[in-house]
Image 1 (cartoon, rainbow, N blue to C red):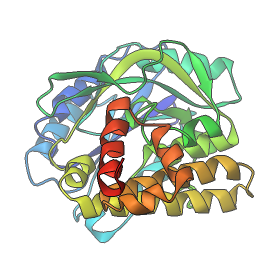
Image 2: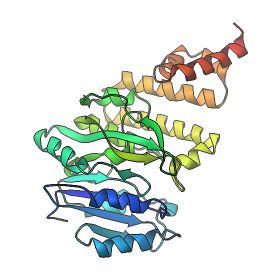
Image 3: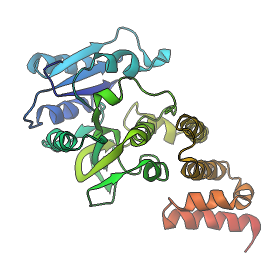
Image 4: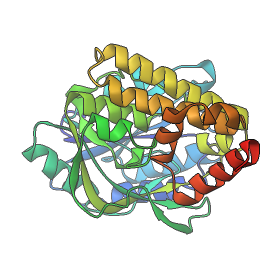
Length: 312
């Protein structure tokens, strides 16, 4: 991959229903530079691997593969660190998983153009549409802002995880992330801690243009598993809190005030999931942190539950 300016990696597992759309988004990119797509298949049990081979044969100048013989995720192996990132030697890295896809043929070009002109930018992102599993639009996007802007560490940590941008929009400098920093780790969440890491060493630039689609509750996705189990959701929020504490320690408490507000927010969510409204009432900082990032409708629903417990 030495002659490529950008390497795109794509994680695939049982994505036969979606991955053609993902691959078409890659091959339709219009760029002034060479790029390659590194596809990792973790022993899919459907026809995903056949589709991958089909595209490799048709576009050998674009696609390269890592086809596992044993499922690495089930072994607890970090696929990116062990199999993907060590192979990348291009200047930039982008990512799109096999159930999401890029919608704008100028995506890579626009992001690379910005990064080339702004060496202090460590991550370039853009807006992403949320779609249903069948491909229909939900009518919502990740970021409501229509302004091109930069985000710092405090901006991101004080937002809801994944509130501003999705993994399919990420493009970063390869020399800033040759292996994921273990201090920025949250089990089951990839994009949020990565964005925090990049913001801790530079800044994140946002292009206010929808250039990818994120498929909600796709078959085999983390979100589909999370939505079906409250205990898993609670566990996820606890993992996020542990991640925040690790980041605070690693960054030598430089952003402790913002990190504590984020911890308060996640603790408040846990109280809501566990229906511990009495504990929530006794934690004004948690309530304030929670309400800061919630819609008025959600706030009203929680407030009504609190009132039901303690009276008006």
